[in-house]
Image 1 (cartoon, helix red, strand yellow):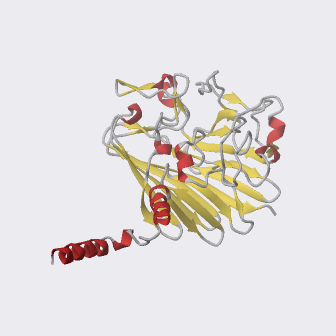
Image 2 (image 1 turned 60 degrees about the horizontal axis):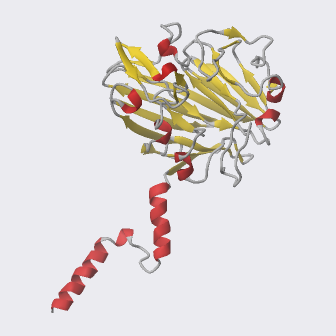
Image 3 (image 1 turned 90 degrees about the horizontal axis):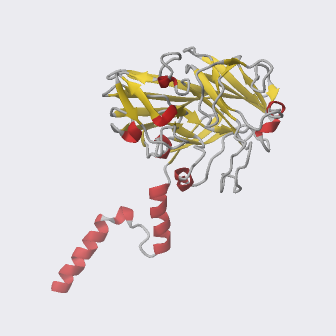
Length: 354
């Protein structure tokens, strides 16, 4: 009777946990399933024009596919673990602050905040463990829309305020919207961007044509910190006012890692990238955009089973003016007031070249 009771208890236990122990006779398969449960955080949306894949790690854009040609136009990784070692922030939703903050510190409301330093004495892309490496929660998933949320606690990477932040990916015909919004219980900084590296299907982006719709850019210091001065692009390698072969502007300099300046809010076309098959147009209500041609890009692996190398893709990061918080109100400030909501977007329109 005692043996029978023990047997009954064991059978009841197995029935209770049946959903998670489906293949009890195949332990190797179980290990694979468990590993997928902990590392596979991918979500897919699509329509007749586009297919987009996003991972919860960093609310990161993994794939951006033109369905007619089958071309995936962003760099990335097949496995989520690689995004945790993603030194180049491929596809990530960057925060709290995109780009650099000088001396890894700023003053707000008379208080000086010391931030984590991860770039030659400056803070870059939100710090040592910024939004790109956080696990975001997917709170909405439909056929054509994904919404992710993250709570950045007061003091994280040195920033003030408990910040509730949200990232949205939404399809509309041949357009992908990336949008962020945030609310905080203290005044803080919120300056996010999407850090995708684009390549329309060429060996490198040196063979693609770029158009940027402003005639102003910002120089940098020796550590790539954007200075508080604005220069004209005329007669410089930074001039993309007309569609220009990227390699033509990189004959005099090896790399472009600079902010382009509009300093206006509201919807505007900021950049276009094209080859003989596709054209990507980028619109945003953010005041500026950073161009990074990624001459030093090196990864151990990539989605196609081979590593990425220099000029494998370029980043077009719509954002507030880098280090604006330390430039005395000279540029539009990325300050989120306590109890208020900040929302901004980048819109990517992908079409065939006629």
